[in-house]
Length: 143
Image (tube, rainbow, N blue to C red; front, side, top):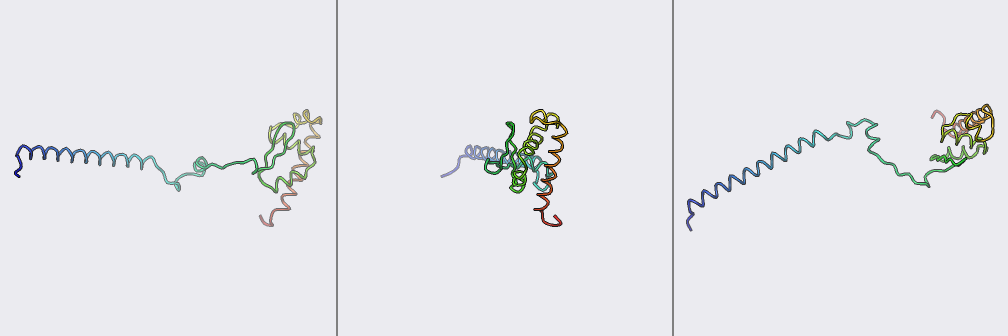
């Protein structure tokens, strides 16, 4: 079977067309890979703040111990801190919960619990000192 010269010309045009398509696809691929390399960054190049934005921590109700007072809940994740907090008297727990969750001043807490500002300050200071002592007793020496 002999090839027709007209068919040979069509074959050459088709061959040139295929080569052009492949060449353009290769250029587009390389251009996209370059753009992707410019936009990507290694994890080792990221700052700690940027890495923190990428992570997610699941929080479950069973992971923390909840203390409540005046409709406010204080979630404590650390068992040792929760035990030390539970050892505080109820009045001091209420003051600390209001102070930590609502960030209220001593006078505002006093209005809620029926105490003077100075009494709230004394109870809060005493509670913080007791927590420090209880937790420092549990800390290993030199830590």
